[in-house]
Image (cartoon, rainbow, N blue to C red; front, side, top):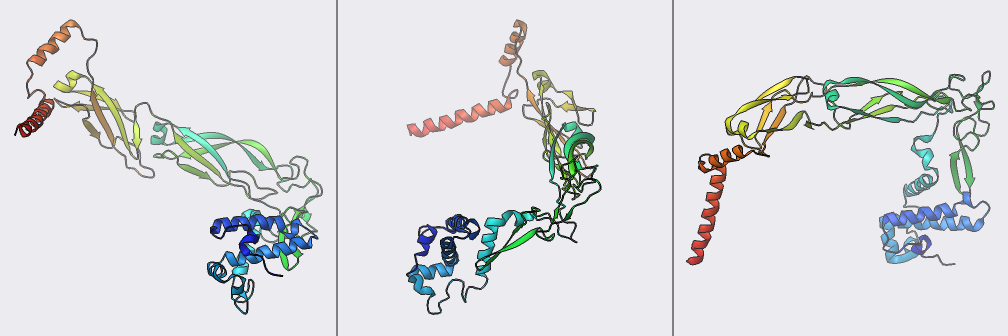
Length: 387
């Protein structure tokens, strides 16, 4: 009986990518795996055929040989699938099988073994708490009290999950290992024990307070110390303050994620603070001063020189944000904008018109220089056109 084309076996095109090949293999392997088809000889044959095809096509060199010579590439000592010349590839293939069917157990979900930290004890989950603070609190630092609903170790059974006067016993199915092995043809597959669900222990008389889980839900009040200089998105870890572990297992951690409220006056950029202050036309023209509040609760005086324009920036050293874990301070940058007068009286309009009539290029150097350059530009274009 001739072998079927490997691409046909896996249901993929000859131009398929490695991702497409692997995805198709996993779907077919799950469908035809002997565990899902107990006693079905045809399913076992189909499963072996899928394995053989995948071993060849998942290897770049073997796939190239197969594309060129077909099944003949692996005959007469050419390195048949699973035979000499494949090195550790069969182990890689088996790894794919285990990833497909037992991914949970291979990704840190396996519980303790006897003598290795306590069978049946599982670490609690980590928790997250979002805490919003003001910019002033971020500048000074603060101690905040938070209330967190979380699982804690059951006080009645001390976290064991067993009723008072009793205790968990070793699982008779797996002997406390939490895993059992089953043979399917030439495969020996390890899986989570169905009796104890991987814990290695069984509880005959569960604690009535926690139902055998070893933990109950309560609200706890915790104190969080927020250091000065924290930024938006800073994460604070409180070790062991997360969810309690199952049956006396270690607790997870609590992560506090900080967010800073938008400030009505300041904008922050790292350790520096920025703000914009409007000033009157008279102050801008004649000079003057104004005061601004700072994050340390004091007022700072800013002197405005004569002839200040919109966009002028003033820098106040060490009036910015606290630098985290440092005694340094950022700077405060103040940008002024000249406010145009509105709702003028008749007398005010007359004075402004009189001022405008008496103005010269020296009074408005920027606008005068700009329009002079504009005229020179268009005069140059007219001259070249006439020439």
